[in-house]
Length: 207
Image 1: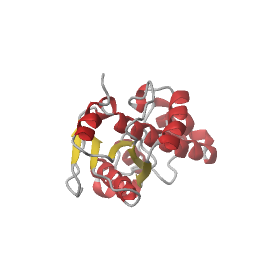
Image 2: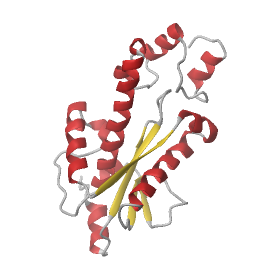
Image 3: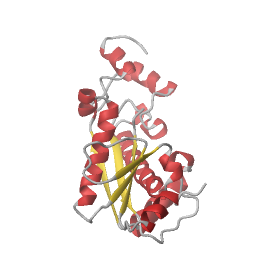
């Protein structure tokens, strides 16, 4: 698949600074939803760069460092579990994306945004939502890697504080082992109270 098609078209139209935007962490029961906005140079090349979920952790980590060192600009946007509970995860994902974009706008004259699937009606510059954008746009793929590695690092930090919950292995997703640990040890701060399994524990039920 040609994952430079959208960028090439915009460059040919005279657009120079394109932000790719993606988010990670809609499904986990715990922690922030994390978005990244990444602007790549026109001559950027990184063989194998694609949707972060399709990369091994080792490769993601290598790509993360390479992208950070070779991009024009990048920024992270995060929305907390409390906010997720207030506005729902879809809107929280959009909010995280807007935070990341606004940070990049303070660094450079961002001219267009390519975003993974989600329309951004509050964005004051042109943008293109792309279904499966992390497979079709190298800029979105780069943002996907930045966001994924950032969130995984947060889960590793949580694992250091609460090793018996197994955050390093499940990254907060509702795996069988994660749910068993919640039944056994209960909730810690940072869980999304609007999510079904967490609601059940708060109501005193086993999950």
